[in-house]
Image (cartoon, rainbow, N blue to C red; front, side, top):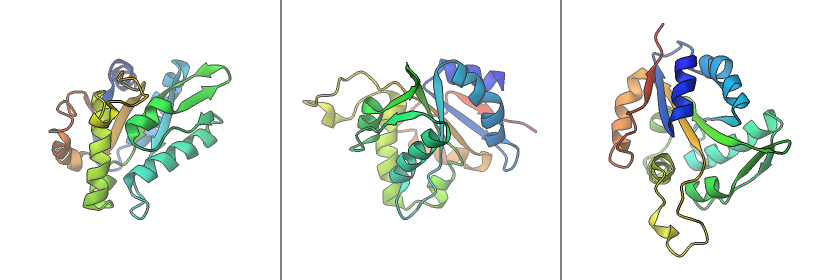
Length: 183
């Protein structure tokens, strides 16, 4: 748990993978999340498992639910894009503004449950947030070009790690910071 926590603290994007049923979610819930909360980081575990609403709507709904469950004061962001959302959202615990950690749990669902258009829309928007490089439509926008303050942890089954190669053109170092959980 310590090694994964250090990786998450040090990097914008980390990929956690293991064989099915080994305890990725348990590790995040039991070992990593509590330590991160003490560092002013808010773990927001979401899934992209609603094929009707789509991947992006699943993320926004999951964030709102995670805030409710953790008793966090949540000021929703602009859902025009993931970039806009994380530039405008606020998460408060008392008078402390928290840094969000978007935990995309069971991320293989993006490949198994989401349609190609939903997946592509998500990847397009996610790539900007993951790299910290704003989308072209920011030119002339009232948002600054500085990246949103957010961390991302992708958790998925080991047999889907190769599918992340689909994202490597948009997020070249998607697999640079990875953590393999062994039995």
